[in-house]
Structures are given as C-alpha cells and as structure tokens.
Image (cartoon, rainbow, N blue to C red; front, top):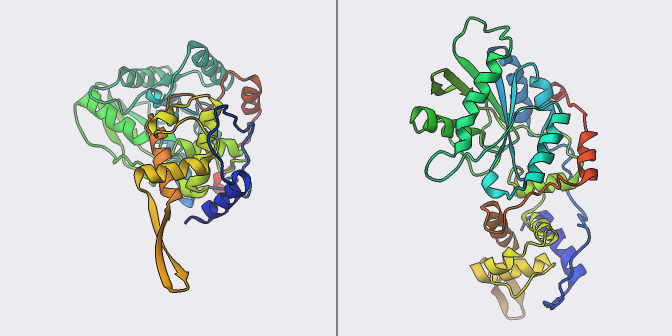
Length: 362
C-alpha cells in the first residue's frame, strides 16, 4: 500500500470511524490535506532540460501553440512557457471541451482573464473526438498561419514552410494535436505516440508535417510544469486531470479530493454510477464500497494462534484508481474545476507573475 495512502487512511478512520448513510446529507466545508507531500518542487529533470532545448531551437520556430486542459482553464498553466517563448506569435488551445459544460458566462470570463494576461488568441478544442475530426481542429492551422503572416519572421524570412512548436504541461493533448491535424489535413494516420499517463513525451522531437498547403510542421515537446506549485488545491486539480501522477499525493487522497469536489458542485452522478443509496462525504466508505462492487481486494497473511491465515482486505488504491478513471472519462459529470466566475479566485491568479529560470535547475 502507498505510504501516503496508509497515513491518509489512518486519518480517515479516526475522523469518520464507522458511519452510516443519513437521509440529510452534510459535507465538509473545506478540504483537510493533513500530512502531505509537497508540490513545491515537483519538476523532473527532463522538464528542465526540455525547456532549455526549446529555447535553443526557438529561432527556427515561427509560432507557439500552448495546450491546456479546459477543465482547469486558469489553474496549473506554466507562466514560464509563455514568458520564455513570448518572442513568437502565441496561440492557446483549451482542450478536452467534451469533458466540460460551459455557459456563455464562463467562456466570457475565461476570454476576459486571458485578455488581461495579453493572451489574445484562444481556441477551445476537442482533439480526441470519436469518428470525424472535431470542427475546432480545422481552425487551428488557419489561426497559426494568420498569426505568422502578421509577424516578422526575423530568422526565417526566406523560408516558405511554417514551423510550430507545441508546448504545455503533461497530458493535455500535445501529441493528440499532431495526430488530429495530420488526419484532418493530410488524411494520414500516425505521428507521435499518445500516452494515457503524464510524462509520456520526454524529448523535443523532430518536426512532423501536418499540412501541405501551406506546408506546416509541428514540433512536439515534453510537458513542463511550473516548478513551484504552492497552492495545494491547484496541485490536486492537476492530479484530478491526470497531469500529475497519482503517486505524488497517493491515489486515495486524490480520490478523497474528487469526492469533496463532486459534493461541492452538488453533482451526485457518482451515486448512480457506483450503485450507492445516496451521496456520502466519507471517501473511506466509498472506496470500500467500490472495492466490493469491482472485486478489488488484497490478500494478506495474518498470524493467528494456529498459524498463518490469508484474508482479503479492500484494495483502497485500486478502488481509488477506478473512481478517478470514471471521472477522467467523463462518467461522473462534466464541469469546470476552476471557479472562473469567482472574483477572488481570478484576482489571485492575476497577481501570480513570478517567472522561474529553469536554467538554474540542475
């Protein structure tokens, strides 16, 4: 069992003990992180090396596309990417809109936030649309070409082709973008392999053609986090969106934060999905129920007076993974994790302008 899971479950047993469902549902007003690992410096070495290499090849790039998860349109972006690459035309894609339910008010608030950040070009996308290419994909290349044509190509005035670097945090759809554009514009399959977990792409790859008229090439890059994530809620949202490996916090703690978030949004779809009699606030009870429903057990040897006896106990980490997987696939409801209509939330991110020079990272 994960070491963070063990301490977390002990805390949960103490807090909740044995608890039954009640007709009147009550939930926590805030999330207690308790003893926890820190997100302050979760920055694998390949990320630092990747950003250094991006800067070195920047003179051969005409435009930057940054991709971010639309479920967290404000939280978790790496401001260092835009600052380090801001000399080039910049397009921001907010991907995975199939997992979010937007209102016009939400969209307007997001656009307004980025206008204040001098990010004028934002497109909402769905890069893994089943069947035909999603209409949003067809807007990307024309938008980039327009940006390049309006800019000065200092190092590439005589070149007719267009090179675009694709950047962002891990597991937001960078490799999926290249595959979608190749399929939509060239009718070709292939491209960089798409991973289910964060950190799949670890090197700045050779350019891949995604359009022939005009000739456009994309450069895939490794996902790069902001090195210092000081807000634990931001770290948890990144974990919910599978941009941070679950083991950083422990699957059971991430699952508890998901339960807290679903209840906070008053979205109780999970009760029907997992055959629960009603909403609950105790993740330990939920994970035990999921273990029984999905047959997720561990076998442990217990010493008794007559010798060792093997007993089955719930596998809370595996049950947590089942719970998180259902959310990430959109089976537990689609909603924004960022409260973009909350002035205090927006104001906090407007004040965060610190830039980290990764070249000091060793």
